[in-house]
Image (cartoon, rainbow, N blue to C red; front, side, top):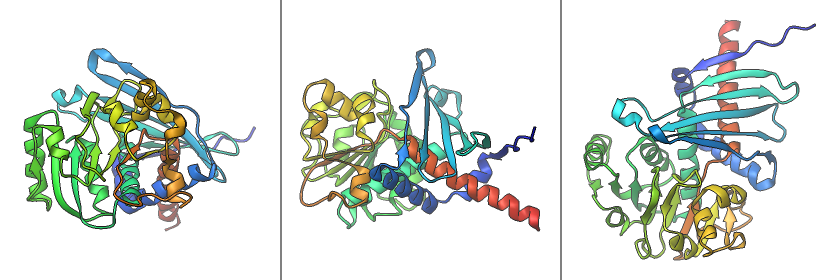
Length: 330
């Protein structure tokens, strides 16, 4: 019997060095183009909670058609870790051969690729759903995802004014201080999320909230809201009537959002139906449907799709395996 191929293992620090923000943005566009063309096999995600420690686990995977690999990602969010002084997120990405089924690699990224691909999707949404001018931006959530959303957004849009909010006032102030050192000295910290978003052209919500932070009338007319925190059926950052009342509702994957995202709550409340979703992000990236057309209010519901994990995981694996092969050749 032939020997099974060896499994390559790459650690977090090599992955961080290999996968730049630009690579992440490219991976997001690749994923959503595949989704828009129907060229991705994406099984329903698995998830469960650990309520005693405010924790959750998600398993997502996909195969992008034509790829020699498929991917399975396990990611956790244990929000009580803040009190322990350790990161809230962790995880691992598994790479498999799409012809033999053998595992080819383990990306021990501790959740970094999940954080990065989520932020890249937010930036891709902003790029396609906002005007190409300096924007007034509000970010709700001072955790790693809020920070990474800002980092990736800065790659595609100029920021005129920045407002930030989180559930912890001390954490909000700490982030404001860090932003000042990082090139945003005029960032404004808010104690009220609706005051933070009042003048924003672009609102990004990146929290694990289980009750709405944004209610009726809080969004400025013509704003774009990119919601990335509601990746479970009990999470909710935006009131259902706000979602239903938007001029355009865009999803990452509608079949998933009706079970997990902000759209899920609006549909469950009877305020909209699946047919009221304007488009999936992939359709807009492919220019099958226009993104922003006028002074319209747009809500983009991003629940995180396995195709994103497959795209960024494959790019990381190919780059790192190529580095090893080059090193061996030398």
